[in-house]
Each structure stands twice: as C-alpha cells, then as structure tokens.
Image (tube, rainbow, N blue to C red; front, side, top):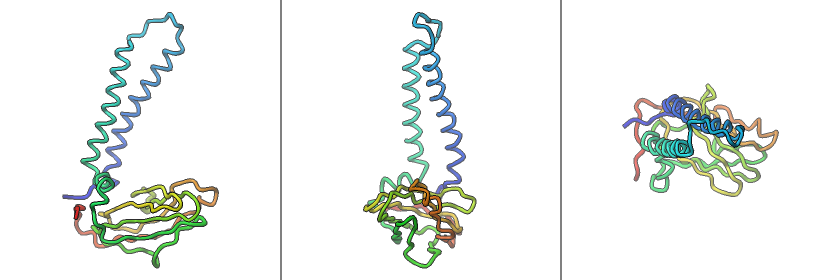
Length: 197
C-alpha cells in the first residue's frame, strides 16, 4: 500500500473544502438577507424547515468529509494510533529565544519509509514547528507549547531537502525562525505503508 503525500491530497481537499465553504457561505448569506428584510416580509421560498434541513445536510457533509479523509489520509490514522506505532527513531528539537536547536549537525538525514517521531520542546514561548519543501509547500506542522512534549509522528515518502519554519506568531522575531536545509530524506525508491507494531 502506498503512502499518500500531502501534495496528492491537497488538490482534492482544495476542491472539496471550496465547495463545502461555498455551501456554508450561501447559508450565511441567506441568513444575512433575511435579517435585513422587514418583519412582515415572507416572500422567501426558504422556510425554517428548508433552512434547518440544509443546515443538517451541511453538518452531515462536514462529518462525512472527516470520516472519508480518515480512511484516505494516512497521517490522520498515524496521529490517532501514535501510541501503538513504534517509531524507528525520535528526533528531539528545542525551541528557545526564537531559534530551533537541532540535535545534530544539519541536515538531519532520514531514510525514506523511516518512522520518525519529532519531539519539539519550547523553553519560553509558543512556537510553530513546520516542515516545508523547497517550493514552500508544507509537509506538516504542529503547535509547540512551552514546557511540554509536542510530538508528531511522520513517515516520509518523498526524497528531498526540507526547511523547518515556525508556523505560529511568537512576536516580530518569530518571522525569522527558519532553519534552511534542516532535514534530508534519502533512498525513496518505493513507497511503504506505516505499520503498527
């Protein structure tokens, strides 16, 4: 079974969520229109019954999207099952004074298919921890809360060199929180699926 990459998922999710967002916006637009009409105006074909039926369909669609993505997007299952998945290695990273402190000389070399647990600890502020491709598309990200272990489990299926960038506002200095060429993924000849131990 192949690993689905974030690039592969992004195009489909853009379309799905755009349609879903437009449906929600139409509901908000209808509501805004109705509250601006005189109280005696009853010209709308959208009755409360139609309104609540539409609202219910939007809720069911939203829940359905998340159920379907759980089965399609592997990292959703990884996150839910991460306590049962034994990583091949753990990479400890510290964030403080608007800098990331890596555990070894960069780049951190990861083999394709290796299950890696990133544990990022902040010693002062709330930061973000995002891994980005060279085209600035994001592989993954998480919020890094001070004085806690902030863990994300990942299995790489794409070779390349990645940058670490803060994805959370932590003051003006946070704009420069970037480690270029921080991670290099090698030996991606075939895609492999993450298995539970």
